Length: 237
Ligand SMILES: O=P(O)(O)OP(=O)(O)OP(=O)(O)OC[C@H]1O[C@@H](n2cnc3c(O)ncnc32)[C@H](O)[C@@H]1O
Ligand SMILES: [Mg+2]
Image (tube, rainbow, N blue to C red; front, side, top):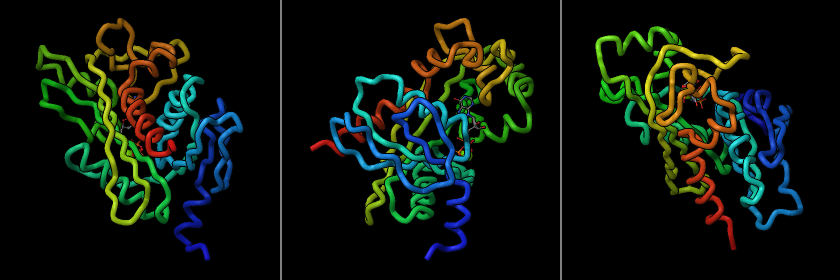
């Protein structure tokens, strides 16, 4: 029997194959099998997030290189609590909560920080609230009294096999850069704080560069490379 809570979860479930180029939201909880060309069998892993931009980037990054081992990831939209603390502890706890919601299935969650060096790493994991309340200009204003505008974007994934007695495994990736007055792409659409983050070595913000470039240098790309390596090892043989 499906509990009322799981019915809510199922009704907000996006299912997508990360082996497909297009994200197709469907109100299903089933998984999409690996293509017959798959060189190994990897059970579906569900990425639990309430953020469609994260989901899109994870999909694009995992699809970018067809020579990599394919594996199937579904996604589930759940508004997980915004926790406080150290990024690794936050994402581990986020994963435990997500696994609890999902009855021990293979589960992946992610938490993103934007850390200002002049502020000793803050806003860090609290960037969601700072960005919501202050916007791009307000975030710039926070650094107005400092010469040091350097910052880094940190992405931390936690993966759980869902097996009893196991702890989530954490994978992180960081990209250095600096905080700049907002600069958007010509189409004006942007993901979160991308318009104010200029990665080191580039003269464009994340929002100005094409998505392939962002996805080849981003905090998310670096963390996902470690996730991919782990999953490939875990499910080979
Ligand atoms: O359900 P979850 O996965 O928690 O999604 P969220 O939107 O709550 O995300 P976080 O808790 O990780 O908060 C990170 C904030 O930073 C934003 N963000 C995350 N990755 C980003 C990126 O690559 N570029 C710009 N903004 C990003 C995101 O929209 C949030 O406002
Ligand atoms: Mg969140």
